[in-house]
Length: 401
Image (cartoon, rainbow, N blue to C red; front, side):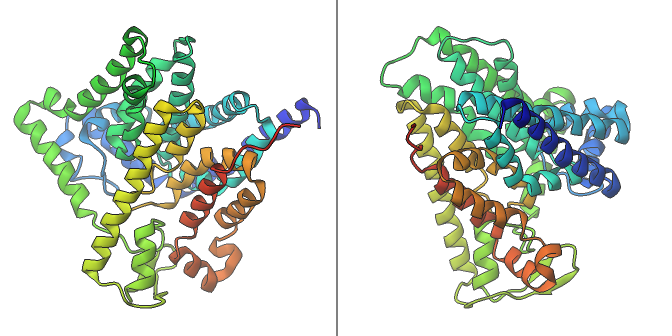
């Protein structure tokens, strides 16, 4: 197929997925976006003390991030949600095209990647979530940094890293990516020229710390500190959700091996999918701690590998793809982070990528029914699909003819 035809098919795929998701978002009312908008309106109206008190749903993000969300307040819901969604519609194909060029993969891989993560993207759009925007900023950041250290200093790179630093305050799982410039500079076999790298120190540490302590700067020490304490309390209060919508590894263990029932979001019912009830509360905490140490160790190993191995972009994409794994709470839209893994998987192990695509997209209740669907969801099927993509992305690149 000619490149022009692939481009048309790619544009059509983007149009269909994002049109459906955007329409569903307006129909559903984009509940998560309403939380962001309400937080921004509190700051805009001079009432940031209401962030964790008055909200359509729980606002669990850093208070400083609400100051940036306040830029949405003058737009209102309709215009604000269109702007929020338009960013995703524009930036997603741009990111995929850039990946295709850098990895010399072609638009056919970009199309397959979109189809693999279509369901998480649709959920992200439907609820007005922020995860896709965070993911895209991380992809642009590692692409830009990869160019920068080769001497190609593009103007958009540092602003993207500043955006990543702000997002990392709201979504803490993005934090490891902020360490990439530091690992590269201090651990590379040949020490690099600091003048090439120092802008990234200011584009990461300064915006991150500024966003964390923005409430203190804006409200004074006492009120600002009180808001930070409320944020930490809100994080602690969210606990460990057992409902099947939580697709984390620890949720899988809890639902399959503790004997406890789990709530099925959307069906308003409880199911018990326990295989063997041999895990108690203490053992569950120990398993959770071991899982966090294992996955954080894996992420740290990737950062070390980034500093020392030549295939840096692939390592950075692998790192982005596993950022959500340590968390005990991984909602379905978080699996947009499978996008870089899916891209690599389709290049290196297409059959494994196909299996993961089926598990990610064809495991919904409307397809499997109201008996198998909830039970596969209870087994954290999206987590296992993402794990398949990760191992597929680790496979060696196919030999060139």
